[in-house]
Image 1 (cartoon, rainbow, N blue to C red):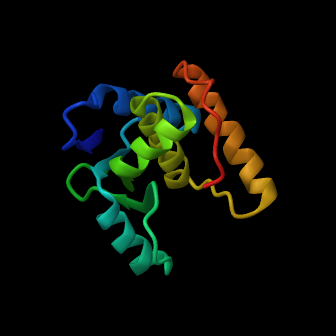
Image 2: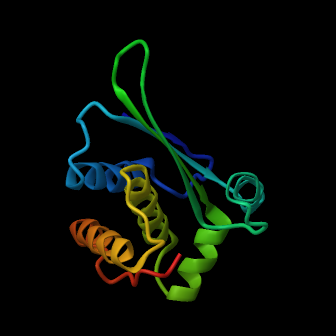
Length: 149
């Protein structure tokens, strides 16, 4: 189950669920895996970025892998993704594509992090960008250029 805390009326939760689901399928995640996506603001991501990564700046997306099981159902809980809607809006405007496409990209990116991908090293980054491009193509968003984040 993909839980979405969506306080942004203009974004359809179904788009975000689809982006996360396609990513989980591509990465062979367990069918009963759970995760949460929170759509929030720069202030919250700035605070979390500083607290958990030691970076005193806002960012577009943060992922917090959990790798736990729900004690009631036994379903794996993959973790949480938080996305700054103001930052996504700014990035979409700069790139010339809809904010809905940018947020889907960030969902894919964050979900890949939950699945163990990283982009700190060149080889890891190439694998992650390839996986990201595969999901974006399936979503019909292959026109989006993947930024270094």
